[in-house]
Image 1 (spheres, rainbow, N blue to C red):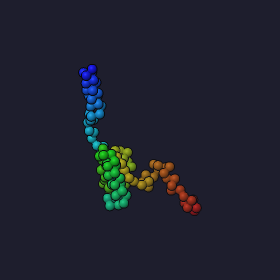
Image 2: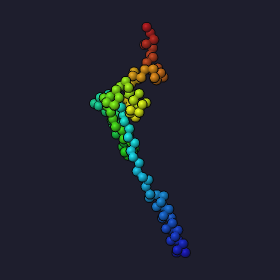
Image 3: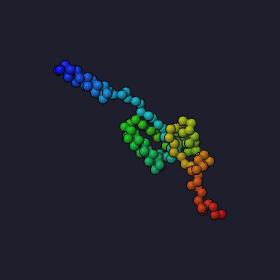
Image 4: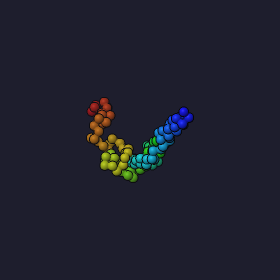
Length: 117
């Protein structure tokens, strides 16, 4: 009886060790680039930098975002194309630089003031 209980105890301990104490190999952090045309000292750049830090914090370093302010990675008019072509992973631009590409977003430009001529 003692041997059976000991074998059961050791078997359960081994199973527990295999299931819960083994660790998966560490994965490399996902590194993203963020192209923003505003200068580094501009409010939008400062907020984007804080956002990037928060993403890294909340993912425990699994996602790291490198900022490229002031159009250093892609100039403002090419920010969207830069993301599409893989030059950057994230881009901040304004709709004026992508006129005609996002027609549903251009609805905001239609105001009653513009209708009265």
